[in-house]
Image (cartoon, rainbow, N blue to C red; front, side, top):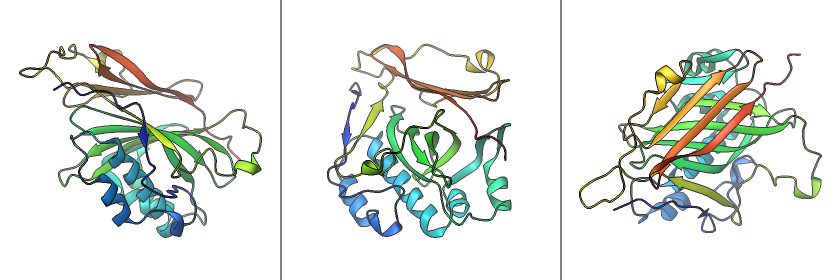
Length: 255
């Protein structure tokens, strides 16, 4: 069966979900699990949304770097102002800030087999500056998702304050929708969709590039000479590669 694209993943069943407010405002794990029960297929954007929200709650209640370590996969990379660094080694050395960065997803794209997912969302940092972030998630042997790459950058210029919609850019609530994009599955018996073309990303993008194990999702990062942190991701759908995420992100000025 060809995997169809899921254009909108409505979270109406998760009442008052919040990825960045006080911990008590987020949904319980029981609520999240009830929503996910019975959803068909391996690639489930809702699972990534639930993981992101649980991670964000943990950052508020346990500390930003403590939560980062708990949700990191072996070899996880943080893309900072000077390039990528070992995320686990860095978080192990750092003390948790008094206030965690707040964030929430807006787009989730997944490989057909669900083994790799990429989330694009909004964040607000400790200085009340907002921007975009991208996180790459990989399913582990225990079937839990852990992050393997993370990058973020502030809006430049910053948008004007919106006090009447204080959490509008960040918080995921019951009336919000998260865009879910799922790649078509490779050709199998009875499947008319052609397989993705063979790729050699390493030669085209030597800084950092990855193709999912099933060949239906690819992503790459670059650290450019001007300090721009570039990220792009594509998924294979209806016989062609489609760009779903492309971000050029900047770091805050050094104080």
